[in-house]
Amino acid sequence: MNLSQEFANHCELALPPWAQPFLSAWNEPLDGPAARMRLAVALSAENVRQATGGPFGAIVVEERGSRLIGAGVNLVTTAGLSLAHAEMVAISLAQSAVATWNLGATGPAQLVTSCEPCAMCFGAVPWSGVGSVVWGARKEDAEAAGFDEGDKPADWAQTLEKRGIRTRGDVLRQEAAAVLAAYATGDGAIYHPEKN
Amino acid sequence: MNLSQEFANHCELALPPWAQPFLSAWNEPLDGPAARMRLAVALSAENVRQATGGPFGAIVVEERGSRLIGAGVNLVTTAGLSLAHAEMVAISLAQSAVATWNLGATGPAQLVTSCEPCAMCFGAVPWSGVGSVVWGARKEDAEAAGFDEGDKPADWAQTLEKRGIRTRGDVLRQEAAAVLAAYATGDGAIYHPEKN
Image (cartoon, rainbow over the protein chains, first blue to last red):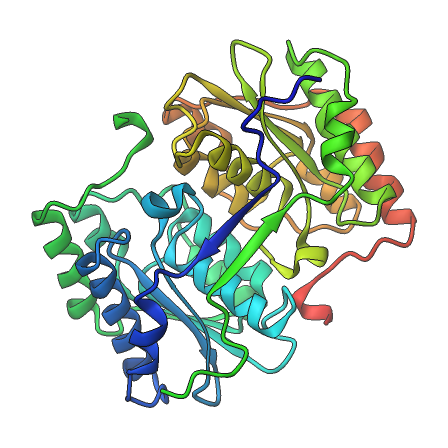
């Protein structure tokens, strides 16, 4: 077969240059849902301010400790990869850090995301090995800002619970939703395959 | 914050070394669903033979032409990334090749996968910009081989159709399912967060 010249053998997910200094400067211990969410929401806001992607942030943290294992922001437009949602980036970088696809291998891990996961990120949760998921803004907040959350089962949170993955929503919902609303009224592009 | 020493800034999705020569040597034009599926299934089988991941293969191809835009195999265990399903790899490498997250930007593209997409890969389809999805083995074939397909809406294919994404299953189902069955009776690990 004549492969097209631009055929790609690999691709990369990489945090923007601002992320590591931003995380290093973060002083608050990640010792509870609100403290963890403050960082996830701060990442979502900084991602917009730096113009490196959509208004979404996520972290993976030790469930019972406070160690940050991975962090992510939405990088769809800058990485040119539709899978580069904040949750997918945080999960993948956490897995790279612990050198296994199973984030439960070295003790319970928690995914904390500034917005309720979309259909893809919801589907990714059970495969990642995280023991719990915490989100801030709701699907309707994302939709009010023009984003599409995809088609999840109506009882999506319960399906996670049935798999032994604990769920908790509405943590700092107002703060998280405010970042979405500000993005929608600003000049940040909301990307849709249909519109390109 | 004291970031853990092993904190990761980036990670990579890369095809195994055998893939590019394998694709270059493939002679059959990708001019219809069965021809395309033969390549996706061949990738799934070769991935097992080479011990580079689970028994799943996928390609992204021009819908109306026959140019291969991207290819993927399951790389979960070898990449250490739970998102590295064949479909996600094929979509991401295709997006890298065309330098945009929107695979519809340069004409309709088709995702052809050896097995019905799991909940994550189903959720990823609308974000990728592909215009159609074709699969071989069914969910029940994957489950019979010990794999978990996750929790999709019961009408998942119809939700794609409603978004204007055409779907077609059961293309070379027997051939695709045979690779799954052979894997299950061989010594390839079936990975579950619960079992690690």
